[in-house]
Amino acid sequence: MMRLANASAGAGQGLNCGTMILASASPASVALALAAAAAYAVPAAAAPRLSERGARLALWAAWLLHAVVLGWTLLGLGQPQGPRFGFAPALSVTAWLVLTVYAIERQLFPQLQARWVLGALGAAAILLALVFPGTPLHVSASPWLPLHWALGIASYGLFAAAVVHAWLMRRAEKQIRQASDAQAGVPLLTLERLTFRFAGAGFVLLSATLLAGLLFGEAVYGPGRPWRWDHKTAFSVMAWLAFALLLVGRARFGWRGRTAVRVLYTGSLLLLLAYVGSRFVIEVVLGRAL
Image (cartoon, rainbow, N blue to C red):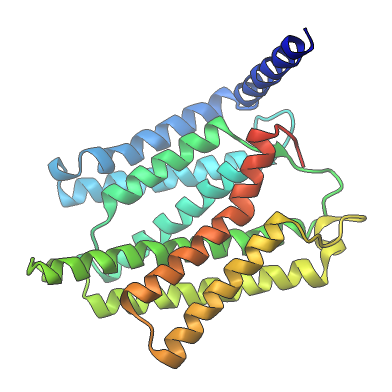
């Protein structure tokens, strides 16, 4: 009987969690999110059938709708519990930043081809944030906390851009080995240079984020909430060490190609586990608010 009661309580908790997720989104935010996801799906699903101008306009429309969705959600408009944040909104902001980088780079390198991948990424991130909007922010949170988060999410976006460029670099290398038309895309050395520039900029922001949390813990997180050595901190420090190793290896030993990409992927995975992974476990697996 006790087991049956515990199972019933667990099922009820899961049902309440799902009800809370659905109830936290206003009809306007749901409509905006679905419109943005649909706009991203156009260049992702119909890329071969769209003209260059049509695909570009669809991606710009999706990017603008995504920005409206983020502003609506992060400001807490139409939400009785106010602003919310969690692992899925963090991924949504990261995807939007990557799309921003891509939109700018397309002006400099028109031959850059990654619309269908980024369109699918944007649609998935928006839908995930719609289903898992996160938890309400603490009333006692410091006004410096949004700046701390902005630094961390910006570093996420830069490292995500570095990962995308590393993937494009590996694809260009494969085309060269297979004697394909590698001239149709961005030159390999340009992709490599951009990859390390994004990784270097992300490393600077990640360092600033960790230093701010270490030196000004209570000022950032609020009174009585100092810096804590937990899973998030441990994964963040390991990611920082991996990226430091990557940049030092590049500067001292000329790391490039497969070795550099593997270290970049390892550091990015550790950074993903630091915030997104820990918040996923807390919000979804354990069903607790911070």
